[in-house]
Length: 202
Ligand code: ATP
Ligand code: MG
Image (cartoon, rainbow, N blue to C red; front, side, top):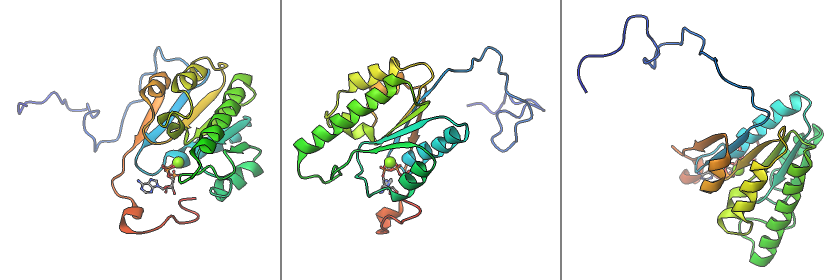
């Protein structure tokens, strides 16, 4: 790196401390009919960001569906209750399908059933936003076929937006997504021995 700089007086775009002074040029940009979002990574915030987007969609009057692949029905009481109150179609991969399920065959079957349901919701096109919460694990563990998920996303009705969450999202899904965010863990309270807190973590 040389001491000379390209920065010119008045050109503040390279200075992270300077507020932007110009509206970004949107020339040539298009309004998408729909988007596919991926929230992945090992930091906190993947599902809560998805539910934040659900609020935006509900505010527009969009029909919204959430399919939870990993958590049993009684885990996410907070967002499930309020989303149902808001008219969101909420499907929890149900009876005992959790992290520490002892019956892997049952877990696999439940994940497949959740995917069949989700694939049907996407293809029907009745919901403008479909959230597939914690779906990455079902693909990583090969309970559901990643290629089939990627194909369903690519072939979705054009106005159906999709958000997929979960750690270690497969590359095939990242490839077909428009916006992919990796939550990076800087710190997590859990590592200091602090358990999940109701109202904050669920
Ligand atoms: P959230 O639902 O809070 O947005 P998340 O979807 O990013 O979290 P998950 O992997 O789904 O994270 O984990 C669900 C639960 O585990 C939440 O209670 C969350 O606070 C907690 N959690 C998230 N990241 C971590 C982490 N790195 N270590 C320990 N616990 C975590
Ligand atoms: Mg989550």
